[in-house]
Amino acid sequence: MANRLPVDRVVEPDSDSEWRRSPGGLVTALEPVMRRADGAWVGWPGQPDIEVDPFEFEGTYLVPVSLTADEIENYYEGMSNDTFWPLYHDVISPPRYRRVWWDAYVRVNRRFAEAAASVAAEGATVWVQDYQLQLVPAMLREARPDLTIGYFHHIPFPAYGLYSQLPWRRQVLEGLLGADVIGFQRVADAGNFARAVRRQLRYQTKATGITVPQADGTTRNALAKAFPISIDTSSYIELAGRPDIKARAAEIRESLGNPKKILLGVDRLDYTKGIRHRLKAFGELLEDGRVNVEDVTLVQVASPSRERVDAYMQLRDEIELTVGRINGDYDTMGHTAIRYLHQAYPREEMVALFLAADVMLVTALRDGMNLVAKEYVATRTDNRGVLVLSEFAGAADELSSAIRINPHDIGGMKEAIMRAIEMPAGEQGRRMRALRKKVLEHDVDRWSRSFLDALDEARRAKKNSGRA
Image 1 (tube, one colour):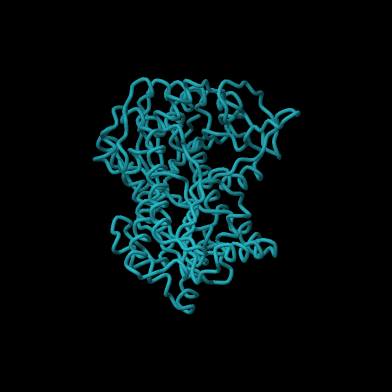
Image 2: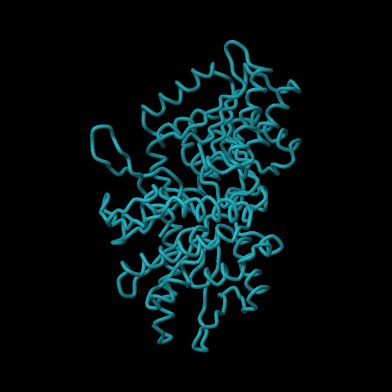
């Protein structure tokens, strides 16, 4: 179960509508899992006020959940993206708390739970994905106590001092504790969740799990721990080896005027990604004369995101003003300081960009994982390139051979960028080999297997306890 189905509905001129696979990290991560399972995917079909019957798509049974335009505005744009998202990302932007949003969130979560309950086989496993559906586990357990329920939280879970601001803090914790296994990206996130449970609900928490009281006076165990998500590395390695994509990478370098070094940022246009901080650091390096546009170019891909939310409209204006100012000050006829691309690109083009880039900049202010960092590493089969990685991205826990930065420290980021630009080939090779070893060993298959193994263990424990 996820907020969205893994497909988009496309209406071509003079033809019927058709479905195409969606881009995005969640779909990419779960696609290999769904291919292996005789399962169903429950989610919203991506457009308001459309009723679609369940259907098969590329071997997966899809169960659409209809949402009205008002529900999308209140449950998704409001509660999910203007309350939970900023709150869970350390209040980088102020969250707003509106009761009408919460009411819609409860209503939509119940509809999702009912949809899953209606299609799940007796004793089935249901894996709920992410913060838009935090109430579903408890609702599902109430309707179908025979199910084994997992929940994975793809974004950070905040420290208690921030989480406690939420007016509905108890309801969310109780909703999540309906799951048998609650997965987080980082050990720190799982710890924050357990601390919130202790402070708010007074339940006993241990490394082996959280003791959850039941209505009949018994207790059950809910496991809350880190399961760091990853990528399908083999698909990126395959793309990186294709002659046409290698040729496209060379073409990209040429189109930028063949600079000595290309810096690359690839993000959704989101205030959590630290794009403004990255641009400030690069602009100051140009101003200081430490880099010049003939030698170094920054390519910034910022794919459109939540364009109806005020904070995102303001962010886009700020970034585009900054890019325009820097380019106006430093561009020449043959070279551009920042090539800014407010577009989404297919995976093939992204891999070509990864191959063309000498330095990958991941400067997130707060990020659950950041799969772009892992994608860049996976494509660098030549063991060249440098990853500059924020310590506030979940990927920093695993990718210790990257150059780590605090993105709030602009001076420190400038030094890290210069170190990356000037890094000798030998050091690049040592670091990249270590990074690739980690990413190749800890791929998306290992992530999904570890989570599903934990769910299997929970199912066996439930069976042994004699509980339905």
